[in-house]
Length: 341
Image 1 (cartoon, rainbow, N blue to C red):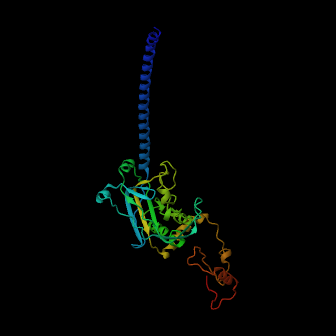
Image 2: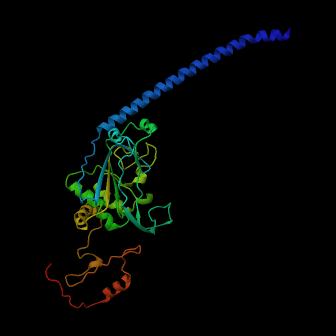
Image 3: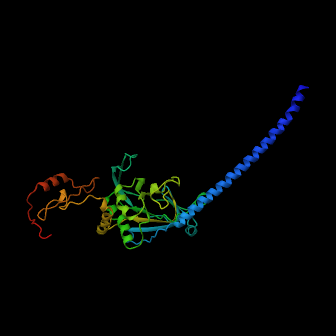
């Protein structure tokens, strides 16, 4: 009976296999339990460290003052708010309860306009020309969180306070200078906020921030000036960032302020320009005693400065001819040499 003998001899092997399988299953269960416990311990430690670091910061001081009368300037303040690719997700329970239908207050940026008629020189990845004349900024979305977002975001930074600017004509030097830098300078001067705010520029159509925007705002913050598109991107949380106190990418904040700047005042630019100059003074080459090659001469020399601008708006059409005529003229009727210093 060879078949019965074979089957009889196989029984012990089957039992040993089942016993080994049971042991492996127990080991696997124990291993997974240990991994889960270790993960909890690690996460708890990381959370404790993050909480400790969070509490060690000095929360940014900020109160706003209207440099220009409304409606030239508008301020909006949000609590417990996340920003996701330009969308404002408000977790403020009190605000949501006051708006049970879900219609949260909107950011009124409908009158923020820009004019852009150049190739985009600030992005290596975008060589296509961008055209527009008096184009208005797209209205940002402000909404309550979904059920999943309620559970996902439980930490709101107290250490990073973003001040987000929407302003008219950001690609024009004078128009930009008289708005965002002026606002920062005078609010710091009057003691309404310090340099510990993260300054964020909401650029139209997610265009890159022009270099001169960053240059003029850098003296008024200890962080890197950046765009709203970059600041609200879905980069991993451990991504290094020079725009936040944490030094990493943060998208949820206990306080968030938006400033909508429509108007400005050119006369206020002088004091602001002096502050910008003092910030960069050590980086500038030494000034020539006689004013440099462009302005040589004393009181008997007429100095003429011609503004040259591009873009097809408010240009001096015969600028080259005018410059040549001014440079070659030796006599000026009805103009006498200035006296005194």
